[in-house]
Amino acid sequence: MSAASPDDLAIAFRSVLRRLKEAQAEAPGEATAEPTTSLHGFIGEAAQLMGTSADAQAVADAIASMPADQWDDVTLDRLRSIALEIGRLLRQIAALAERS
Figure 1: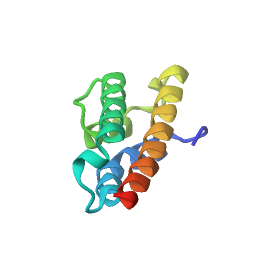
Figure 2: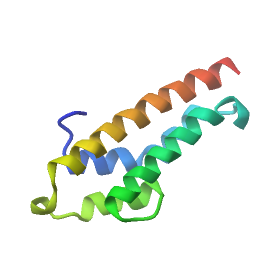
Figure 3: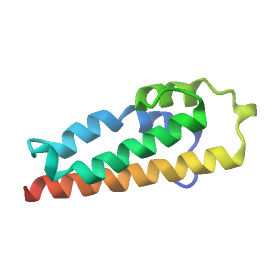
């Protein structure tokens, strides 16, 4: 995702809650609490970067509505890194849920 466009990032953030539900499956909340908390922290950081509420959908909407000529490389690179971290955490949550 290092070369992800803003549109790609918006799609990634739009899918976070669905992917989180799928990853957690029927596992008890305490089994996945630590990485889930970290995931929400990354969503909060992305929201702060985009000046919106700490909700993945709001982040996606803010990314999608940003005009192309207003993006700066630092923000875009950080959002890409956050999206990668969220993906890693989703995989970790799924693995923990499988074991529980």
